[in-house]
Amino acid sequence: MVVIDALDKCECDKDIMIIIKLLLQTDCSTVVPLKFFITSRFKLPIHLRFKGVQDKFIKKILQHEAYGDLDQIYLPVLEQMVNGLKSTTQSNAISEFKLIVGSIITLVNPLGATPLVSLLDISTKKVNNRLQMLHSVLNIPINSTAPIRIFHKLFDFLIYPDPKDVNEFCVDEKATYMMLVDRCLMLLFYSGYLKQDICGLGAPGTSCTNVDQQMIN
Image (cartoon, rainbow, N blue to C red; front, side, top):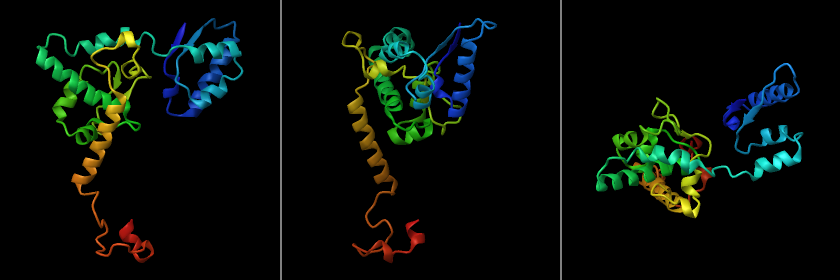
């Protein structure tokens, strides 16, 4: 059996189509007796390409619980961060995890470590400390400005946990969104980008047609 994990992570849809086409051809081959196990989040090109697959199999895929056992797989990875720490230090580490990783898994558009430091107003050292043990569950580029991405949807169990599986690493999605909104506004305000009379016209109510286009740009 060949496992193709996170097919939706292919950067080019054309590559996805080529892979699926080859897989479907192989399925009919008696020369290459292989079975393929594919995982993917919903992505329209993938969904449409598999329209020819029998409905009952598609139904099983769509109804499958995507993160049913993820807590059992990845929770030990998270627990490694706090194992052996004193109670107060452990509490601080978990709070930092929720702030940093909670932001990473909640942000619609991923950020790199450096932009994340600016957005959250925390030290680079704290971000690096919290992320250094998570390379198995996060794609953390060497370039600190490149976006940090999660592998698949494996952190869903922290945002949408089963009531019986709630743990200390769980992230309050709504509270995290509110915090990120506040931080974005604070960043805009204190950076000087968000200010009254941004073009320096000195005349409130001036029509944009009376403002030099170069100044607007």
